[in-house]
Length: 489
Image: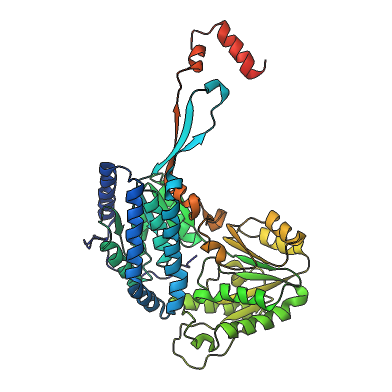
């Protein structure tokens, strides 16, 4: 997900406006307040949880204009419709999904009881863990803070939020939203630089959810392990697109172009590279150029085109393209050319052809508007290429429902899959969202999110007919008979 860049410092505060000293001790005190409140009040019932979600939903809508403005200011430019569609709407849909299904999620589950324990009853109760820590990234600074928060509230928890230091205006807007909606004992916001983030990840939460880069995720997991805090890691990686032979058409390429360039390419599940049949490389490049021109008629100057988050990230992306050129790759500028310099951080979309496998653009998560293309001859070659690399957060397949698609789905492993589309599998609230291996650990969205932030407590109640008591010491003939029956002897 987001690539770390030089941290910036910002004041630290909590949701009720109380200034927090940016030290681990102060944050630990805040955590203690939330835990004490949780223990005092006990797990919230269904009505209280639905009320909390309704308050959050109303706050999102009432703060929408301020959030859209803050996010655009943090990026240097992001169109209001893009923020509405990629941040506000998914947050509202997630809240509604949880509210409508919460009664079912909270219902105890009956479990099987073996014959030897009959007349006993087994059930699983999902109870709140307590206080959830949520560390959010800069690329979708609102939705990737609020959707985990909604999940934590639905599961009956308190929450402490640590938004990214690279989106300070959005962080301030989130602080204002939470401060007018929740008491600090319910939801608190801690802001600050990377040093504060490191201290935050070392707190003794009951669960920690981190969204960010794989490299930082390793540090977060290491810090959480000191207190044996369970973690959900939403990371990233190089998500491939497999384009089946004959599937290079306008619809396919338009979907890939949108998925690649939404939010300026700064999306954890954006297509990172495309595997295209060797006979269709040129056709794909031509259609990709046409698709980008339709999406952004004025090229990078289009108002709908999002800027790169900061100068350091832009320099990293430019470095990836420059290295590929030096090593013999064809780097092609895509779409309408820039006419002015209205925003110097709006990067021209690029296609990269024939890059060496060990070039940075083929090894590092790109997180920008650069799309490498790699040719394949047989579907087995494409599958082998994917499997030779770390397991990705997303995988996309474009083509018919045939043996080749079945082979891709069966023989590759990824966090999630989109078929004949990009990005939209993440918008399905009833599907788990998460990675595997270097692309993440655990999942949220769907009932999986509710369960990840709940403790599944198994309960067994013995019935009046208590057969197990017949095999207690002192052991005798009845125990021998029982042993033979149970062991098949």
